[in-house]
Length: 594
Image (cartoon, rainbow, N blue to C red; front, side, top):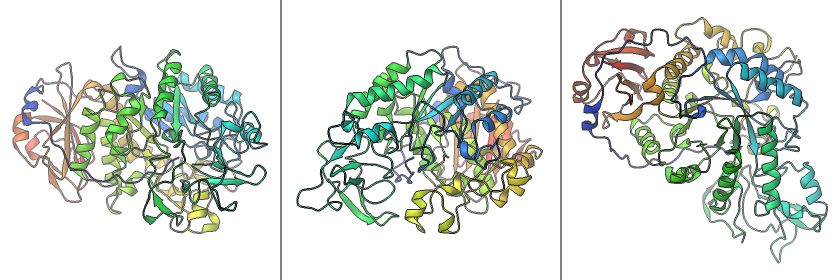
Protein backbone atom coordinates (compact mmCIF):
# COMPACT_ATOMS: atom_id res chain seq x y z
CA UNK A 1 0.00 0.00 0.00
CA UNK A 2 2.78 2.46 0.84
CA UNK A 3 4.04 4.29 -2.22
CA UNK A 4 7.74 3.97 -2.99
CA UNK A 5 10.10 6.90 -3.19
CA UNK A 6 13.56 6.78 -4.69
CA UNK A 7 16.08 6.33 -1.87
CA UNK A 8 18.94 8.78 -1.59
CA UNK A 9 22.26 7.77 -3.08
CA UNK A 10 24.98 6.83 -0.59
CA UNK A 11 28.72 6.52 -0.94
CA UNK A 12 29.72 3.28 -2.64
CA UNK A 13 31.67 0.86 -0.46
CA UNK A 14 33.95 -1.46 -2.38
CA UNK A 15 34.79 -4.48 -0.34
CA UNK A 16 35.51 -7.46 -2.63
CA UNK A 17 39.18 -7.61 -3.53
CA UNK A 18 40.40 -9.26 -6.69
CA UNK A 19 42.18 -11.89 -4.62
CA UNK A 20 38.80 -13.46 -3.89
CA UNK A 21 38.56 -14.35 -7.54
CA UNK A 22 41.48 -16.75 -7.27
CA UNK A 23 39.20 -19.19 -5.49
CA UNK A 24 36.78 -19.42 -8.39
CA UNK A 25 36.54 -22.81 -10.02
CA UNK A 26 37.89 -23.47 -13.49
CA UNK A 27 36.61 -27.04 -13.94
CA UNK A 28 34.82 -27.49 -17.28
CA UNK A 29 31.14 -28.34 -17.26
CA UNK A 30 28.49 -29.15 -19.83
CA UNK A 31 26.08 -26.25 -20.35
CA UNK A 32 22.38 -26.37 -19.61
CA UNK A 33 21.16 -27.36 -23.04
CA UNK A 34 17.49 -26.51 -22.66
CA UNK A 35 17.03 -23.75 -20.10
CA UNK A 36 13.44 -23.12 -21.19
CA UNK A 37 12.34 -26.65 -20.28
CA UNK A 38 10.62 -26.12 -16.95
CA UNK A 39 9.19 -29.01 -14.98
CA UNK A 40 8.40 -26.78 -11.99
CA UNK A 41 10.07 -29.28 -9.69
CA UNK A 42 13.00 -27.37 -8.29
CA UNK A 43 16.01 -29.19 -6.98
CA UNK A 44 17.29 -27.74 -3.75
CA UNK A 45 19.43 -28.43 -0.77
CA UNK A 46 17.60 -30.69 1.66
CA UNK A 47 17.81 -28.14 4.48
CA UNK A 48 16.51 -25.23 2.43
CA UNK A 49 12.94 -24.01 2.92
CA UNK A 50 11.03 -23.82 -0.37
CA UNK A 51 10.73 -20.03 -0.27
CA UNK A 52 14.48 -19.50 -0.38
CA UNK A 53 14.58 -20.34 -4.10
CA UNK A 54 11.02 -19.35 -4.95
CA UNK A 55 9.65 -17.18 -7.72
CA UNK A 56 6.71 -15.31 -6.21
CA UNK A 57 4.11 -13.87 -8.60
CA UNK A 58 1.80 -11.10 -7.42
CA UNK A 59 -1.70 -11.23 -8.87
CA UNK A 60 -4.06 -8.29 -8.63
CA UNK A 61 -7.25 -10.41 -8.75
CA UNK A 62 -9.48 -7.71 -10.24
CA UNK A 63 -7.20 -7.58 -13.26
CA UNK A 64 -5.96 -11.10 -13.96
CA UNK A 65 -8.83 -13.10 -15.46
CA UNK A 66 -12.61 -12.63 -15.43
CA UNK A 67 -14.44 -15.98 -15.54
CA UNK A 68 -18.05 -14.79 -15.31
CA UNK A 69 -18.19 -11.83 -17.71
CA UNK A 70 -18.78 -9.04 -15.19
CA UNK A 71 -15.61 -7.15 -16.14
CA UNK A 72 -13.84 -7.93 -12.85
CA UNK A 73 -11.25 -10.67 -12.39
CA UNK A 74 -12.02 -13.46 -9.94
CA UNK A 75 -10.70 -16.61 -8.27
CA UNK A 76 -12.03 -19.02 -10.88
CA UNK A 77 -10.28 -16.92 -13.52
CA UNK A 78 -6.98 -17.38 -11.69
CA UNK A 79 -7.61 -21.12 -11.51
CA UNK A 80 -8.14 -21.16 -15.29
CA UNK A 81 -4.68 -19.64 -15.80
CA UNK A 82 -2.67 -21.91 -13.49
CA UNK A 83 -1.20 -23.88 -16.40
CA UNK A 84 0.25 -20.65 -17.77
CA UNK A 85 1.80 -19.80 -14.39
CA UNK A 86 3.26 -23.30 -14.16
CA UNK A 87 4.81 -22.93 -17.63
CA UNK A 88 6.34 -19.62 -16.59
CA UNK A 89 8.00 -21.25 -13.58
CA UNK A 90 6.04 -19.69 -10.74
CA UNK A 91 6.38 -21.31 -7.32
CA UNK A 92 3.90 -19.23 -5.34
CA UNK A 93 1.11 -16.75 -6.02
CA UNK A 94 0.57 -13.73 -3.79
CA UNK A 95 -3.05 -12.59 -4.05
CA UNK A 96 -3.77 -8.98 -3.21
CA UNK A 97 -6.79 -8.83 -0.85
CA UNK A 98 -9.85 -10.90 -1.79
CA UNK A 99 -11.75 -10.46 1.48
CA UNK A 100 -15.19 -8.78 1.71
CA UNK A 101 -14.66 -5.06 1.32
CA UNK A 102 -16.45 -1.84 0.35
CA UNK A 103 -13.60 -1.54 -2.20
CA UNK A 104 -12.71 2.04 -1.31
CA UNK A 105 -9.07 0.94 -1.59
CA UNK A 106 -9.91 -2.08 -3.76
CA UNK A 107 -9.69 -4.64 -0.99
CA UNK A 108 -7.18 -3.05 1.37
CA UNK A 109 -10.18 -1.85 3.38
CA UNK A 110 -11.33 -5.18 4.83
CA UNK A 111 -14.77 -5.66 6.39
CA UNK A 112 -14.40 -9.40 7.14
CA UNK A 113 -11.04 -11.17 7.48
CA UNK A 114 -12.45 -14.68 7.26
CA UNK A 115 -14.42 -14.77 4.03
CA UNK A 116 -14.22 -14.03 0.30
CA UNK A 117 -15.73 -10.98 -1.39
CA UNK A 118 -18.61 -12.21 -3.60
CA UNK A 119 -17.24 -10.41 -6.64
CA UNK A 120 -14.20 -12.71 -6.46
CA UNK A 121 -16.09 -15.90 -5.61
CA UNK A 122 -16.65 -18.06 -2.55
CA UNK A 123 -14.62 -19.95 0.02
CA UNK A 124 -15.30 -23.06 -2.06
CA UNK A 125 -13.74 -21.30 -5.08
CA UNK A 126 -10.75 -20.39 -2.94
CA UNK A 127 -10.34 -23.97 -1.73
CA UNK A 128 -10.49 -25.16 -5.34
CA UNK A 129 -7.79 -22.67 -6.32
CA UNK A 130 -5.54 -23.89 -3.51
CA UNK A 131 -6.10 -27.52 -4.51
CA UNK A 132 -5.55 -26.97 -8.23
CA UNK A 133 -2.45 -24.89 -7.58
CA UNK A 134 -1.05 -27.63 -5.34
CA UNK A 135 -1.37 -30.11 -8.21
CA UNK A 136 1.01 -27.84 -10.14
CA UNK A 137 3.43 -27.34 -7.24
CA UNK A 138 2.25 -23.74 -6.82
CA UNK A 139 1.51 -22.34 -3.37
CA UNK A 140 -0.97 -19.60 -2.45
CA UNK A 141 -0.13 -16.62 -0.24
CA UNK A 142 -2.71 -14.21 1.14
CA UNK A 143 -2.33 -10.47 1.58
CA UNK A 144 -3.00 -9.63 5.23
CA UNK A 145 -3.79 -6.05 6.28
CA UNK A 146 -3.19 -5.73 10.02
CA UNK A 147 -2.73 -1.97 10.40
CA UNK A 148 -6.35 -1.02 9.77
CA UNK A 149 -9.80 -2.30 8.87
CA UNK A 150 -12.64 -0.87 6.82
CA UNK A 151 -14.92 1.53 8.67
CA UNK A 152 -17.66 -0.98 7.74
CA UNK A 153 -16.00 -3.80 9.70
CA UNK A 154 -18.17 -4.91 12.60
CA UNK A 155 -15.34 -4.11 15.02
CA UNK A 156 -15.28 -0.47 14.00
CA UNK A 157 -19.06 -0.17 13.82
CA UNK A 158 -19.13 -1.26 17.46
CA UNK A 159 -16.17 0.93 18.37
CA UNK A 160 -17.81 4.02 16.90
CA UNK A 161 -21.16 3.39 18.57
CA UNK A 162 -20.18 4.98 21.91
CA UNK A 163 -17.22 5.89 24.08
CA UNK A 164 -18.12 3.09 26.47
CA UNK A 165 -18.38 0.28 23.92
CA UNK A 166 -16.03 -2.65 24.74
CA UNK A 167 -14.38 -2.25 21.34
CA UNK A 168 -13.80 1.48 21.67
CA UNK A 169 -10.16 0.86 22.52
CA UNK A 170 -9.68 -1.43 19.51
CA UNK A 171 -9.04 1.73 17.46
CA UNK A 172 -7.16 4.98 18.10
CA UNK A 173 -9.71 7.53 19.37
CA UNK A 174 -8.65 10.88 20.85
CA UNK A 175 -10.07 14.25 21.83
CA UNK A 176 -9.23 17.25 19.71
CA UNK A 177 -6.61 19.78 20.74
CA UNK A 178 -7.79 22.04 23.55
CA UNK A 179 -8.96 25.48 22.54
CA UNK A 180 -10.00 24.49 19.03
CA UNK A 181 -13.35 23.85 17.43
CA UNK A 182 -14.25 20.49 15.84
CA UNK A 183 -13.72 19.36 13.18
CA UNK A 184 -10.74 21.70 12.86
CA UNK A 185 -8.79 20.79 16.02
CA UNK A 186 -7.34 17.30 15.34
CA UNK A 187 -5.19 15.80 18.10
CA UNK A 188 -1.97 16.61 16.21
CA UNK A 189 -0.57 17.55 12.79
CA UNK A 190 -0.11 14.04 11.37
CA UNK A 191 -1.04 13.66 7.71
CA UNK A 192 -2.46 10.64 5.93
CA UNK A 193 -0.43 8.78 3.33
CA UNK A 194 -3.24 9.60 0.93
CA UNK A 195 -3.54 13.28 1.69
CA UNK A 196 -4.63 15.76 4.39
CA UNK A 197 -5.16 15.14 8.11
CA UNK A 198 -4.80 11.62 9.44
CA UNK A 199 -7.64 12.32 11.90
CA UNK A 200 -11.36 12.06 11.16
CA UNK A 201 -13.86 13.77 13.42
CA UNK A 202 -16.89 11.79 14.62
CA UNK A 203 -19.66 14.18 15.75
CA UNK A 204 -21.61 11.38 17.45
CA UNK A 205 -18.94 10.82 20.11
CA UNK A 206 -17.13 14.16 19.75
CA UNK A 207 -13.74 12.49 19.19
CA UNK A 208 -11.35 11.87 16.32
CA UNK A 209 -10.12 8.51 15.05
CA UNK A 210 -6.71 7.98 13.46
CA UNK A 211 -6.30 6.71 9.89
CA UNK A 212 -2.83 6.37 8.41
CA UNK A 213 -4.41 5.83 5.01
CA UNK A 214 -7.93 6.60 3.76
CA UNK A 215 -10.60 8.06 6.04
CA UNK A 216 -12.48 4.77 5.55
CA UNK A 217 -9.50 2.80 6.92
CA UNK A 218 -9.34 3.42 10.69
CA UNK A 219 -6.14 2.21 12.33
CA UNK A 220 -6.34 -0.61 14.84
CA UNK A 221 -4.90 -0.01 18.29
CA UNK A 222 -2.12 -2.58 18.56
CA UNK A 223 -1.41 -1.54 22.14
CA UNK A 224 -4.60 -3.44 23.03
CA UNK A 225 -3.82 -7.19 23.39
CA UNK A 226 -7.34 -8.07 22.23
CA UNK A 227 -6.52 -6.64 18.80
CA UNK A 228 -3.46 -8.85 18.45
CA UNK A 229 -5.43 -11.93 19.47
CA UNK A 230 -8.19 -11.21 16.96
CA UNK A 231 -5.77 -10.61 14.11
CA UNK A 232 -3.68 -13.69 14.93
CA UNK A 233 -6.90 -15.72 14.93
CA UNK A 234 -7.59 -14.52 11.37
CA UNK A 235 -4.08 -15.55 10.34
CA UNK A 236 -4.76 -19.00 11.78
CA UNK A 237 -8.03 -19.23 9.85
CA UNK A 238 -6.17 -19.08 6.53
CA UNK A 239 -3.23 -21.19 7.66
CA UNK A 240 -5.72 -23.90 8.61
CA UNK A 241 -7.17 -23.56 5.11
CA UNK A 242 -3.83 -24.39 3.54
CA UNK A 243 -2.21 -21.10 2.55
CA UNK A 244 1.58 -21.16 2.38
CA UNK A 245 2.04 -17.81 4.03
CA UNK A 246 1.25 -14.12 3.94
CA UNK A 247 2.39 -10.81 2.58
CA UNK A 248 1.75 -8.19 5.27
CA UNK A 249 0.59 -4.84 3.99
CA UNK A 250 2.11 -1.63 5.39
CA UNK A 251 3.38 -3.65 8.33
CA UNK A 252 5.76 -1.01 9.81
CA UNK A 253 2.77 1.27 10.55
CA UNK A 254 1.14 -0.78 13.34
CA UNK A 255 2.18 1.54 16.16
CA UNK A 256 2.07 5.29 16.73
CA UNK A 257 3.69 7.56 19.29
CA UNK A 258 1.47 7.15 22.39
CA UNK A 259 2.01 10.80 23.35
CA UNK A 260 0.71 11.91 19.91
CA UNK A 261 3.44 14.52 19.57
CA UNK A 262 3.34 16.72 16.48
CA UNK A 263 5.53 15.50 13.62
CA UNK A 264 8.49 17.59 12.53
CA UNK A 265 7.60 19.53 9.41
CA UNK A 266 9.89 19.57 6.36
CA UNK A 267 10.32 21.84 3.39
CA UNK A 268 7.91 21.50 0.49
CA UNK A 269 4.49 19.96 -0.03
CA UNK A 270 3.24 16.57 -1.18
CA UNK A 271 1.01 15.82 -4.18
CA UNK A 272 -2.06 16.77 -2.15
CA UNK A 273 -0.75 20.17 -1.06
CA UNK A 274 0.13 19.12 2.51
CA UNK A 275 3.32 20.26 4.19
CA UNK A 276 5.79 17.37 4.17
CA UNK A 277 6.76 15.90 7.55
CA UNK A 278 8.90 13.27 9.22
CA UNK A 279 7.24 9.86 9.69
CA UNK A 280 9.21 8.70 12.70
CA UNK A 281 6.30 9.13 15.15
CA UNK A 282 3.93 6.85 13.25
CA UNK A 283 6.08 4.57 11.13
CA UNK A 284 8.52 1.76 12.02
CA UNK A 285 8.28 2.15 15.78
CA UNK A 286 10.26 -0.48 17.78
CA UNK A 287 7.16 -2.05 19.36
CA UNK A 288 6.22 -3.64 16.04
CA UNK A 289 9.12 -6.08 16.33
CA UNK A 290 7.65 -7.64 19.49
CA UNK A 291 4.49 -8.38 17.49
CA UNK A 292 6.52 -9.86 14.63
CA UNK A 293 8.35 -12.22 16.97
CA UNK A 294 5.09 -13.47 18.45
CA UNK A 295 3.58 -13.82 14.98
CA UNK A 296 6.57 -15.78 13.71
CA UNK A 297 6.47 -18.07 16.73
CA UNK A 298 2.81 -18.82 16.10
CA UNK A 299 3.24 -19.45 12.36
CA UNK A 300 6.28 -21.67 12.93
CA UNK A 301 4.00 -24.13 14.71
CA UNK A 302 2.50 -25.02 11.32
CA UNK A 303 4.18 -27.56 9.01
CA UNK A 304 5.40 -26.83 5.52
CA UNK A 305 7.74 -23.87 6.00
CA UNK A 306 4.99 -21.24 5.93
CA UNK A 307 6.52 -17.89 4.96
CA UNK A 308 5.97 -14.34 6.16
CA UNK A 309 6.70 -11.51 3.70
CA UNK A 310 6.54 -7.85 4.66
CA UNK A 311 5.87 -4.69 2.71
CA UNK A 312 8.86 -2.88 4.16
CA UNK A 313 9.82 0.43 2.61
CA UNK A 314 12.71 1.31 4.90
CA UNK A 315 15.42 3.99 4.91
CA UNK A 316 18.46 1.69 5.01
CA UNK A 317 19.70 -1.87 5.27
CA UNK A 318 20.19 -1.58 9.04
CA UNK A 319 16.45 -1.10 9.51
CA UNK A 320 15.77 -3.94 7.06
CA UNK A 321 17.93 -6.27 9.13
CA UNK A 322 15.72 -5.64 12.17
CA UNK A 323 12.71 -7.00 10.28
CA UNK A 324 14.43 -10.37 9.93
CA UNK A 325 15.12 -10.35 13.64
CA UNK A 326 18.80 -9.74 12.91
CA UNK A 327 21.07 -12.53 14.09
CA UNK A 328 18.16 -14.27 15.84
CA UNK A 329 16.27 -14.79 12.56
CA UNK A 330 12.99 -14.74 14.48
CA UNK A 331 10.77 -12.20 12.69
CA UNK A 332 9.81 -12.13 8.99
CA UNK A 333 11.60 -14.60 6.74
CA UNK A 334 11.38 -12.22 3.78
CA UNK A 335 10.91 -8.52 4.41
CA UNK A 336 10.92 -6.88 0.98
CA UNK A 337 14.24 -5.28 0.08
CA UNK A 338 13.22 -2.09 -1.74
CA UNK A 339 16.77 -0.73 -1.54
CA UNK A 340 17.73 -2.42 -4.81
CA UNK A 341 14.53 -2.38 -6.87
CA UNK A 342 13.53 1.21 -6.23
CA UNK A 343 16.73 3.14 -6.85
CA UNK A 344 14.89 4.13 -10.06
CA UNK A 345 18.12 4.74 -11.93
CA UNK A 346 20.51 2.34 -13.61
CA UNK A 347 23.61 3.27 -11.66
CA UNK A 348 26.03 0.35 -11.59
CA UNK A 349 27.88 1.65 -8.55
CA UNK A 350 24.70 2.23 -6.56
CA UNK A 351 23.20 -1.14 -7.47
CA UNK A 352 26.49 -2.84 -6.61
CA UNK A 353 26.52 -1.20 -3.19
CA UNK A 354 22.88 -2.02 -2.42
CA UNK A 355 23.32 -5.66 -3.43
CA UNK A 356 26.51 -5.88 -1.38
CA UNK A 357 24.54 -4.54 1.59
CA UNK A 358 22.05 -7.39 1.19
CA UNK A 359 24.93 -9.86 1.02
CA UNK A 360 26.81 -8.64 4.08
CA UNK A 361 24.57 -6.65 6.43
CA UNK A 362 21.51 -8.79 7.16
CA UNK A 363 23.08 -11.50 9.34
CA UNK A 364 23.03 -14.22 6.68
CA UNK A 365 19.29 -13.88 6.21
CA UNK A 366 17.92 -14.32 2.70
CA UNK A 367 17.13 -11.28 0.53
CA UNK A 368 13.87 -10.71 -1.32
CA UNK A 369 14.39 -8.27 -4.17
CA UNK A 370 11.37 -6.45 -5.59
CA UNK A 371 11.16 -4.23 -8.67
CA UNK A 372 7.41 -4.13 -9.34
CA UNK A 373 4.08 -4.15 -7.52
CA UNK A 374 0.54 -2.77 -7.66
CA UNK A 375 1.48 0.59 -6.12
CA UNK A 376 4.19 1.80 -8.49
CA UNK A 377 4.79 2.68 -12.12
CA UNK A 378 6.24 -0.39 -13.81
CA UNK A 379 9.98 -0.70 -13.42
CA UNK A 380 11.12 -0.45 -17.06
CA UNK A 381 9.38 2.93 -17.21
CA UNK A 382 10.87 4.10 -13.92
CA UNK A 383 14.31 2.99 -15.14
CA UNK A 384 13.70 3.40 -18.86
CA UNK A 385 14.93 6.02 -21.31
CA UNK A 386 11.99 5.68 -23.71
CA UNK A 387 14.22 4.17 -26.41
CA UNK A 388 15.73 1.02 -24.89
CA UNK A 389 12.92 0.07 -22.52
CA UNK A 390 12.70 -3.54 -23.73
CA UNK A 391 16.44 -4.05 -23.21
CA UNK A 392 16.14 -2.39 -19.80
CA UNK A 393 13.26 -4.71 -18.91
CA UNK A 394 15.45 -7.69 -19.80
CA UNK A 395 18.31 -6.28 -17.74
CA UNK A 396 16.13 -5.84 -14.65
CA UNK A 397 14.77 -9.38 -15.07
CA UNK A 398 18.31 -10.74 -15.38
CA UNK A 399 19.31 -8.96 -12.18
CA UNK A 400 16.23 -10.22 -10.34
CA UNK A 401 16.56 -13.88 -11.33
CA UNK A 402 20.35 -14.32 -11.22
CA UNK A 403 21.03 -12.60 -7.92
CA UNK A 404 21.11 -14.54 -4.66
CA UNK A 405 17.61 -13.70 -3.54
CA UNK A 406 14.09 -14.93 -3.61
CA UNK A 407 12.35 -13.21 -6.51
CA UNK A 408 9.05 -11.36 -6.52
CA UNK A 409 7.42 -10.37 -9.81
CA UNK A 410 4.14 -8.68 -10.70
CA UNK A 411 1.58 -9.88 -13.24
CA UNK A 412 2.26 -8.54 -16.74
CA UNK A 413 5.91 -7.91 -15.90
CA UNK A 414 6.89 -10.91 -18.00
CA UNK A 415 5.33 -9.49 -21.19
CA UNK A 416 6.27 -5.85 -20.72
CA UNK A 417 2.87 -4.39 -19.96
CA UNK A 418 3.15 -0.61 -19.77
CA UNK A 419 1.74 1.74 -17.19
CA UNK A 420 -1.39 3.29 -18.70
CA UNK A 421 -2.75 6.02 -16.41
CA UNK A 422 -6.10 7.73 -17.06
CA UNK A 423 -6.00 10.86 -19.19
CA UNK A 424 -9.07 12.46 -17.58
CA UNK A 425 -9.85 12.91 -13.91
CA UNK A 426 -13.39 11.62 -14.46
CA UNK A 427 -11.94 8.24 -15.49
CA UNK A 428 -9.83 7.78 -12.34
CA UNK A 429 -10.82 4.87 -10.09
CA UNK A 430 -8.06 5.10 -7.47
CA UNK A 431 -9.14 7.65 -4.82
CA UNK A 432 -5.63 9.04 -4.43
CA UNK A 433 -5.78 10.02 -8.09
CA UNK A 434 -9.08 11.77 -7.54
CA UNK A 435 -7.65 13.65 -4.55
CA UNK A 436 -4.25 14.44 -6.04
CA UNK A 437 -5.07 15.04 -9.74
CA UNK A 438 -3.22 16.09 -11.84
CA UNK A 439 0.06 15.88 -9.90
CA UNK A 440 -0.95 12.47 -8.52
CA UNK A 441 -2.83 10.40 -11.12
CA UNK A 442 -3.30 7.39 -8.87
CA UNK A 443 -2.35 3.76 -9.38
CA UNK A 444 -4.84 2.70 -12.06
CA UNK A 445 -2.09 2.72 -14.68
CA UNK A 446 -0.21 -0.23 -13.20
CA UNK A 447 -3.39 -2.22 -12.46
CA UNK A 448 -4.91 -2.56 -15.93
CA UNK A 449 -6.19 -6.00 -17.06
CA UNK A 450 -3.74 -8.73 -18.01
CA UNK A 451 -3.11 -8.91 -21.74
CA UNK A 452 -3.54 -12.51 -22.84
CA UNK A 453 -4.19 -12.27 -26.58
CA UNK A 454 -5.57 -10.04 -29.34
CA UNK A 455 -9.24 -10.94 -28.82
CA UNK A 456 -11.86 -8.77 -27.14
CA UNK A 457 -10.52 -7.13 -23.97
CA UNK A 458 -7.19 -8.90 -24.54
CA UNK A 459 -8.78 -12.20 -23.48
CA UNK A 460 -9.30 -10.88 -19.96
CA UNK A 461 -13.11 -10.66 -20.07
CA UNK A 462 -16.11 -11.04 -22.35
CA UNK A 463 -17.80 -8.02 -20.74
CA UNK A 464 -18.68 -4.94 -22.77
CA UNK A 465 -16.75 -2.85 -20.24
CA UNK A 466 -14.02 -3.90 -17.82
CA UNK A 467 -13.38 -2.35 -14.42
CA UNK A 468 -10.35 -0.57 -15.89
CA UNK A 469 -9.95 -0.14 -19.65
CA UNK A 470 -7.70 -2.59 -21.47
CA UNK A 471 -4.78 -0.60 -22.96
CA UNK A 472 -4.53 -0.50 -26.75
CA UNK A 473 -1.02 -1.96 -26.40
CA UNK A 474 -2.60 -5.43 -26.14
CA UNK A 475 -2.63 -5.66 -29.94
CA UNK A 476 1.16 -6.10 -29.90
CA UNK A 477 1.92 -6.92 -26.25
CA UNK A 478 0.30 -10.12 -25.03
CA UNK A 479 1.09 -13.64 -23.90
CA UNK A 480 -0.07 -15.06 -27.23
CA UNK A 481 2.05 -12.67 -29.30
CA UNK A 482 5.19 -13.32 -27.27
CA UNK A 483 4.99 -17.08 -26.81
CA UNK A 484 6.08 -17.70 -30.40
CA UNK A 485 8.66 -14.88 -30.57
CA UNK A 486 12.07 -16.33 -29.55
CA UNK A 487 13.50 -13.00 -28.40
CA UNK A 488 10.38 -11.84 -26.56
CA UNK A 489 10.40 -10.62 -23.00
CA UNK A 490 8.14 -13.52 -22.03
CA UNK A 491 10.58 -16.14 -23.33
CA UNK A 492 13.45 -14.24 -21.70
CA UNK A 493 11.66 -14.62 -18.35
CA UNK A 494 11.00 -18.30 -18.96
CA UNK A 495 14.65 -18.94 -19.81
CA UNK A 496 15.94 -17.00 -16.81
CA UNK A 497 13.63 -18.76 -14.38
CA UNK A 498 14.43 -22.19 -15.83
CA UNK A 499 18.18 -21.51 -15.65
CA UNK A 500 17.83 -20.26 -12.07
CA UNK A 501 15.87 -23.39 -11.19
CA UNK A 502 18.25 -25.89 -12.74
CA UNK A 503 21.76 -24.50 -12.26
CA UNK A 504 23.42 -25.20 -8.87
CA UNK A 505 25.50 -22.01 -8.96
CA UNK A 506 22.46 -19.79 -9.55
CA UNK A 507 20.43 -21.66 -6.96
CA UNK A 508 22.90 -21.92 -4.12
CA UNK A 509 26.10 -20.15 -5.09
CA UNK A 510 27.81 -17.32 -3.29
CA UNK A 511 27.48 -13.92 -4.98
CA UNK A 512 30.80 -12.13 -5.61
CA UNK A 513 31.08 -8.73 -7.27
CA UNK A 514 33.82 -8.34 -9.87
CA UNK A 515 35.28 -5.36 -11.73
CA UNK A 516 34.02 -3.33 -8.80
CA UNK A 517 35.31 0.03 -10.03
CA UNK A 518 33.43 -0.18 -13.33
CA UNK A 519 30.90 2.71 -13.37
CA UNK A 520 29.05 1.35 -16.40
CA UNK A 521 28.75 -2.44 -16.14
CA UNK A 522 27.48 -4.39 -13.13
CA UNK A 523 29.20 -7.78 -13.05
CA UNK A 524 29.01 -10.53 -10.48
CA UNK A 525 29.79 -14.20 -10.16
CA UNK A 526 27.57 -16.88 -8.69
CA UNK A 527 30.17 -19.20 -7.23
CA UNK A 528 28.99 -22.76 -6.71
CA UNK A 529 29.81 -24.03 -3.24
CA UNK A 530 30.45 -27.54 -4.53
CA UNK A 531 33.38 -26.37 -6.64
CA UNK A 532 31.65 -26.68 -9.99
CA UNK A 533 32.13 -23.96 -12.62
CA UNK A 534 30.76 -20.59 -11.67
CA UNK A 535 28.46 -18.30 -13.63
CA UNK A 536 29.31 -14.73 -14.61
CA UNK A 537 26.52 -12.16 -15.05
CA UNK A 538 27.29 -8.82 -16.71
CA UNK A 539 24.74 -6.02 -17.17
CA UNK A 540 25.44 -2.84 -19.12
CA UNK A 541 23.72 -0.05 -17.20
CA UNK A 542 24.34 2.60 -19.88
CA UNK A 543 22.97 3.59 -23.26
CA UNK A 544 26.36 3.10 -24.96
CA UNK A 545 28.21 -0.10 -25.94
CA UNK A 546 30.58 -1.20 -23.19
CA UNK A 547 33.35 -3.82 -22.97
CA UNK A 548 32.53 -6.62 -20.57
CA UNK A 549 35.26 -5.43 -18.19
CA UNK A 550 36.70 -1.98 -17.67
CA UNK A 551 39.70 -3.62 -15.99
CA UNK A 552 40.93 -6.48 -18.17
CA UNK A 553 42.86 -8.01 -15.27
CA UNK A 554 39.56 -9.50 -14.19
CA UNK A 555 39.28 -11.35 -17.47
CA UNK A 556 42.81 -12.71 -17.01
CA UNK A 557 41.98 -13.88 -13.51
CA UNK A 558 38.80 -15.59 -14.59
CA UNK A 559 40.26 -17.22 -17.66
CA UNK A 560 39.49 -16.53 -21.28
CA UNK A 561 37.15 -19.39 -22.05
CA UNK A 562 33.42 -19.13 -21.31
CA UNK A 563 30.18 -20.59 -22.55
CA UNK A 564 27.31 -18.21 -23.18
CA UNK A 565 24.12 -19.37 -21.48
CA UNK A 566 21.78 -16.44 -22.07
CA UNK A 567 22.14 -13.01 -23.63
CA UNK A 568 19.78 -10.26 -24.69
CA UNK A 569 21.94 -9.71 -27.79
CA UNK A 570 21.67 -12.58 -30.31
CA UNK A 571 25.08 -11.66 -31.79
CA UNK A 572 26.70 -12.73 -28.49
CA UNK A 573 24.97 -16.09 -28.31
CA UNK A 574 28.06 -17.97 -29.46
CA UNK A 575 30.62 -15.89 -27.58
CA UNK A 576 33.33 -18.07 -25.99
CA UNK A 577 36.05 -15.55 -25.13
CA UNK A 578 35.75 -12.94 -22.38
CA UNK A 579 38.07 -10.60 -24.27
CA UNK A 580 35.77 -10.49 -27.28
CA UNK A 581 32.54 -9.44 -25.63
CA UNK A 582 31.14 -5.94 -26.00
CA UNK A 583 27.74 -5.40 -24.44
CA UNK A 584 25.23 -3.34 -26.46
CA UNK A 585 23.29 -0.53 -24.75
CA UNK A 586 21.60 -2.01 -21.68
CA UNK A 587 22.73 -5.45 -22.78
CA UNK A 588 22.67 -8.53 -20.55
CA UNK A 589 25.05 -11.48 -20.78
CA UNK A 590 25.19 -14.64 -18.65
CA UNK A 591 27.91 -17.23 -19.15
CA UNK A 592 29.60 -20.20 -17.52
CA UNK A 593 33.28 -19.90 -16.69
CA UNK A 594 35.46 -22.74 -17.91
